[in-house]
Image (cartoon, rainbow, N blue to C red; front, side):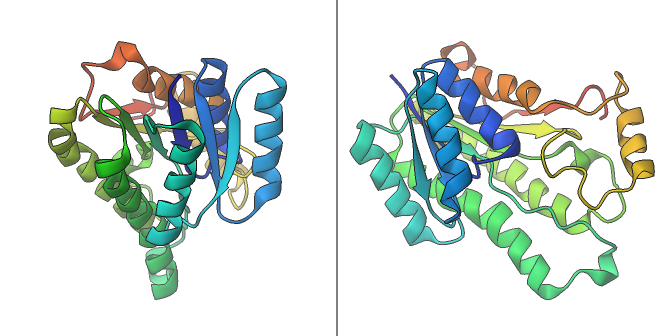
Length: 241
């Protein structure tokens, strides 16, 4: 049985990924940034359905905390086979209004957090493992207000492409999944109906995506059928970009 670590997995797309992998027989570690209640709910739900899960606290910006989390996973289950880099912050506002603190936070979580996970996977992930990073389809849309957010996602896409070659000799695949606008608990926060309508209109289906639709692609990449898929950025956006 394989073991997966999903960062930022207590809500939204991360939660759906955890539930989908667990339903396929993967043991899933639900990372949370020291806010245990939502993560514990996900664990309880997965266990009630017959799956195996545990909640692990770590701020992905802190390498020592991240390393301790990985050690907990390996101690509990014996191996670490799948990493899903999902934890992220999305600060979207007009460029002149973004503060240095918001810039630093965006890169610390969205890029440094991914860097930590991938670097720890270098010596601790089992051979023939899977690394999947959640990027964003907004990198192709040039949306005003997304300059810093999309810069962080562009960075992790480059990490994905280059590290696929470095991890390749061990049989570890490295891919990115780029969701489009997706209906999560918090997605509508701070967005006008007009803006949401524009996003829905960009899709070939005239709607927002569902977290389960993103999770299905992640689950494919995490499985045995994706042995020959690496260095890819798969856009899951209903034809938006």
